[in-house]
Image (cartoon, rainbow, N blue to C red; front, side, top):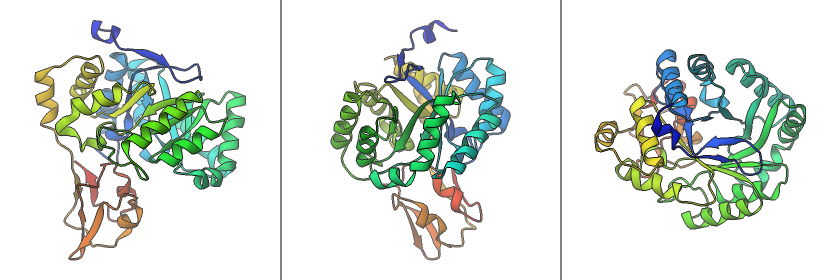
Length: 321
């Protein structure tokens, strides 16, 4: 491990007892919904991050990135903390999701298993069966900690009220981009409440899915300064991005790295063969897509570059580039 990684901060995630690096590798970026790197290339980037000291990976069943993680574990020969998520809402559905995660990543225990996108009390109640199965899985040692991910203030508050939920993965960034039901300040108040209740918190979309790229250092520094946040998940698709984010999280700057990574802007691309079926419009919770003259166009001021819409395109014409 390099001398730089020796300075990477490690913390306990809430009251879970799980020790994580302050910087979390968001695996979505390397996979089919975003950069769509070849398996070996994507796995090498993840393994590089692990060897640099990042011991925390964030993924989800929907990201289709389990094979990348399995291969990265073989390359790096380390066992990091892995968080994954599932949309399952029934007991059987969640059992299948947990089995799939363990089998496809080649691990016996999932460190952190989250209900994916729980935005209020009603959605959490609708996933009661799945949540209860995760509590049972935790007792059996198949899962170490249970939580939720959320894009809303109400979601954080709902998670805070449930004693069995140990971890919350909320969206928070410099401008409040992507928060579904409130302001940046309201989200900060919600995560402060969650911290009071002992919840482990790791942030998502600190860079607004890439939309805050022009002020990326400031954006990451802002989230890094929030005292209630244990770690920050950042999507990375290259070794240069790993190096740069490690530099920033440690409070340093590197002009050369900043120029290299800054030149790699990201956009949501709608291919020319889009026939305007509208499937992606219905799936986008941020209303960032619209039909114009028979094809889909992106409203850049609303898009957080999550790439989720690509899963709903029957013609595979949506990608992040």
